Image 1 (cartoon, helix red, strand yellow):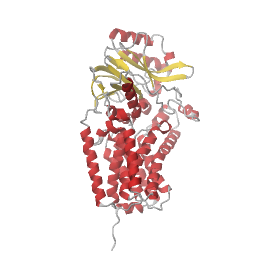
Image 2 (cartoon, helix red, strand yellow):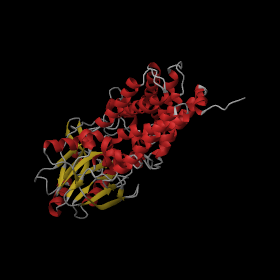
Image 3 (cartoon, rainbow, N blue to C red):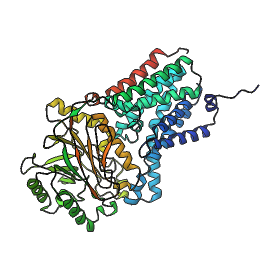
Image 4 (cartoon, helix red, strand yellow):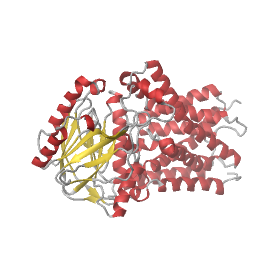
Amino acid sequence: MKTELGIGQKLRQLSLPKTLLLSLAAGSSAVFSFAPFYVWPVQVVSMALLFAMLLSLPDNTEKKRPFLTGAVFGFGWMLTTIAWLVIAMSRYGGMPVVLAVLALVVLCAFLALYAGLAALLIHQIRHRFRIPLAPALLLLTPAVWMLSEWLRGWLLTGFPWAISGYAHSQSVFAGFAPVAGVYGLSLIAAFAAAVLALFLIGDAPARWRQGAVAALCVLSVAGSALRHQHWTQASGQPLQVRLLQGNVDQTIKFDQQHVNDSLALYHQMATAKATDLVAMPETALPVLSSMLPPDYLSSVRQFSERSGTAVLLGLGMHDGPQKYANSLIGYGPAIAANSYYRYDKHHLLPFGEFVPAGFGWFVKMMQIPIGDFTGAGELQMAMPVKDQWIMPNICYESLFGEEIANQIRHQIQSGVPAATILLNASNLAWYGDSIAMPQHLQFAQMRVLETGRPMISTTNTGATVAISTDGKVYAQLPYLKQGVLETSVQGYSGATPYIRFGNLLALFAGLLMLAAALLLFRNKAE
């Protein structure tokens, strides 16, 4: 009598090409879990397929199979989420389309190594220590997956774009963000995928399946309940803000014929009316500070003094021969006369703001106006505006939650005024009308959840928004439209667990799960 094979057996019997094709499809589908789609269960299903394929492999499988399965999954994941880089390289960077696509493929292949090595490690540890299926899935696999994403977020300056936890900024697990941050959500998401994989494979004892479902239900209920926990509290009076979106096309931004137009545009927008705070996007002024018209900054300062308006300007500061900084400078009633506030971007973007050794040819091919900025220290002061303290971050820096939390933690511990409002200044015009803008916004929402502080974001083309402490956007300008967002923002003080401990809680939980799998279940039968 012919019996039908279970999913685990079917996965085990797939040829390597079919396994890799399924892995590529699963990884590629994960893009729908992020903004602008927000279908986070897609991610859980895609990761569950990967985990089921890995845990279905027999002991004598060649090492290349789990590695390739994970790497191809990671390649599909990265390729679909950052395909918009081709726009920057070809349309605005001047690179031939074929070379731009090739560069994207090479980058995604490199980033895929993290998932490939994680998959190989899961397979090797499981079979080296003879860990049974259920604990290998529920303890070992989520821990290794999260740790691999954490490594991707800091190794070689880090590239944490589309870390799995970001997909859960609006899921039932979002309440854990102020406790354990985006990597804590990655760990929970991987656990949810592991539970589903346990049922897909179908070989685990009933007690494990029941326990896994119960644990996942507890996490879901706890995540929902934590959304109602207020870790921070309103502080001071709300600010009235004007956030500028010039919508200057990247193809003409640095064209000398249009530079004066951009300078005039942002000067007019900034000084049009009085308010508490006016903020410009990243490098809104498309020339270095040394190349500005002599009276440009002084006229902005005079407007600030006359009207009592604090003004933040985005520009490149020229501090000497070959010394440039991507900066925000600020004037306002709370800033000393004949002085100004300054924030310098410290976490620089490879190839866009600094040139890794040996890659000068790449920057020349992309025709980047300035390839090397100098980075400031991570710990910088917030800007005073009335009774609020504005803590800027510039573009790519909004991906590094641990650095923003560290700034606030240091301010609290040092006794200096701690940030009450976060401000992101960006220029995503490099990526055209792509999903880069909503993705970047989703990552900013995660920073708000982690810190319990609102964020206002001023950008050249979008997303220019105001985000409340619950992570929801309550004011926004349309993408790719010139405009000014006028809104109110309430500052918050206090410290979330994530501000206090950063990524330590997520890393501790991951290492604890890994230790449990190795110490409690090695060489044991289920």
